[in-house]
Image: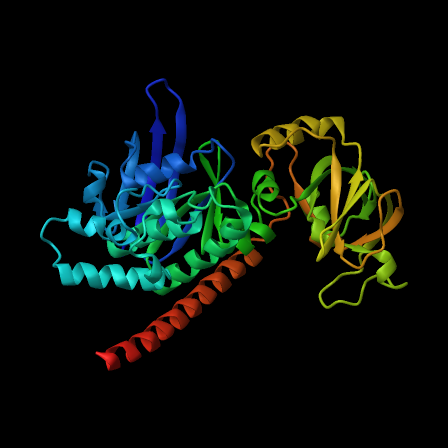
Length: 431
């Protein structure tokens, strides 16, 4: 295992197009880092430069303490798992997993190869499939074989290039769990590329968000969600996405299309002397006021006084555990261009502006209703309409979230090592 350090990495193609623009990223030994972003943001290109399948135009790439810019892929000691599995159809599962070991001519005895293959197959629950060919396996089983081939190499790092995109939704969920379990058990440095933010938020120790070849933010999943640095990160992270509304400053009030919010000290500092801002509110920040009683808040610990307002509900979607309500609104001409640009960057469809509200599944709100909603202004983010910077970002809170994420990861690794030690004890006893 080893750390991976990217120092001002750039990729410019012969036609002059720069796909990756000066990326700086430190990946610690044993860390699980996700590269995420919309189509064409440069994440796969960056991964291919790490493994050596793309040349680096400028900058320095180090694996451990060694600069590897000019090293061939086979000399970097990295194991890559591809989107299309890249299995050999004429070989059995056993031989597919053993292939990289046999490729190292004479380095491993048959007994060592067998031990490594069977250890990987046990980890991946493939023991009963070792004699089968890839054509007779499901998509999830094929992906596990590809992962087994990476595991036996005992490489310095694992690289995953959208490995679950060919699987259906149920299998993706199962494989996410498998990958997370394996990474904790093996504690191998892992870089994982995906466009699926659900994978990013559930798998990674840290997530690196890219936009047009530039690194926007690197943080823990909770850090990205709670303390995004700018409009793009806020809009990309979260499902359903953050709502963005124009906010006009009128005296001591921030006027939104659906509600007026008093400017407290926090919001006043963020707004400064601006007359117009973009306000971001997560769908889960709202509550159905009817279920809360007559008070100013709902009595939950940590909630402020809150603001109530009425809204016309266009459409509702009942999802079992949550009810989504859609509230159309008219945006301000002065921020329309910025929000349309953001929508394009996020691979949006340019649909009409609407606010998404996530309510408890027992809410009785339905389409066509005029509903009373509640939210706490402390949950609002305020963005500069020109730069897109998050003006309400709390650096101290962001640092606390990162410290907490590192501590949780440390505890998870310790638990994984204890389980591994317990699993090995009975095996030694049998031998």
